[in-house]
Length: 592
Ligand code: FHN
Image (tube, rainbow, N blue to C red; front, top):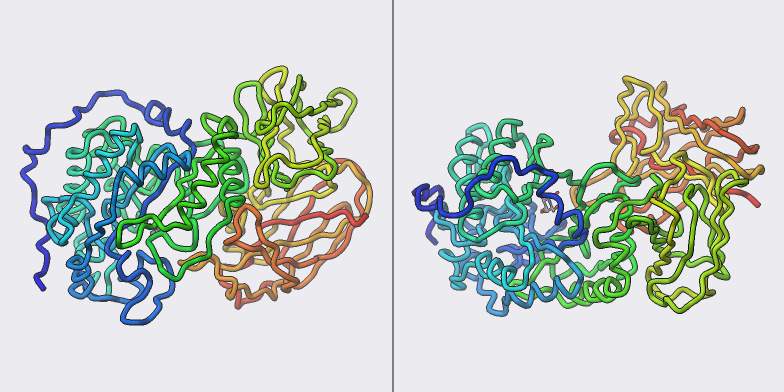
């Protein structure tokens, strides 16, 4: 087997044909189409689709495209997959059609993943789909041409730091000694020249999606961004270029923040548990989860980049196609609540679903259809004119708004008794003006109060960190605390529930790693309740079945109406718990 020659540098002059820089294109200009799009298709496709999660007869745990790393496959052995890569069923037009039918408004494909193999005809390295495979076709070129034919914006994923094929890049410590790596050399002799090829040879590129910015300096991130914008001023750069240098922010994989964010962000998400195809992964998300995630993400000002992992034959797996078709069918009727929609006027989540908006309109994206069709919303400050169902405009929806005397303002809707859609039903509510809402945490009409970590006040200088989903980490010091202010309307007795989470591992949240044993104390209105964190059962997060919380009842408290302050302190820390206490939420549940 020949060793592929890397770093064959292209004469740069030959590639200066395409787009000339125009001064003054800002992130705001570049983001216009992307903000309206809201929903994109991610494609992870490469040599790893051949082993599909299995190496030498053994199942390799973790995500499929990481098989080379997880099984520590030597470069020379992994390279041999190239001679087997012959996906004769690949049809770029079909892929674009699948995305369009799903209602996805942009596509992003792995031009080069961490394994270092380019899915395009690169002159920089022969380790590419055109030169090194019997397929002898330029996958990126064919997809770019198909996207152009169908008016679909196309972006390229490019792994700028990890390249397990190269001794100077990050990641391959089973073949190479990282002490001798010269990252700057790899960056300038492979990564940047290949990014240049991608931005020169395939027409207008909508987006370059960099990933895992491990160890990259601010200057190196900036160099990449400058290169992209010099070659194609309108091309977006995602948040994972590192050092906050991108045009928008990227969250962690499958990490949907638990509050509305006042900046542009995108979440890359899987349809099952892997990105690259794995033959034994059938943990598919249901259409309801996918649609729920889509509207939830838009309600928080984000974009949803939902992944497919085509097989080594070049086909998008049928279970993926079916789920995408279900989302697409839903969007045909309800797309107004998603495309060009703006986030919720409320900063927090609702148990029943989520809110998106457009001008003077609210879209209530209802997952839990209310009993007898009686729907109540607290805290909307704008007057309401009328409401109707997107799926069944002929059905009568009665509106009663008490916005003057009520504390909080109350909107009551009498909806049809049965949900018009089995997944997510959209109620369009026309308002007197742009939607305005109370920003404070308030008790919800079902009596519950949810205090997520994203809304907690932290003492200045605290070491505690809060993730996008509201999870605390680095909470190893018992003197540290979290506090929330919220409004209670209904006097009575409440259960105080702590929702904690397992620690994160590379493949997601590893429930096995939840250790408990710490003691939390909640104090509110003169009551102190405390309990050792023990596993009373998993509470699935309906927005994200991958990440169940662990429930512990801390105790019961009696609350009167008014503004409350709840404090949570760690009265005992279990030294075994990795990264300290991982508290996500405190919930108050009415007992009657
Ligand atoms: O390591 C990669 C992984 O393989 C996959 O590409 C995801 C997609 O967001 N990004 C990295 C992990 O965050």
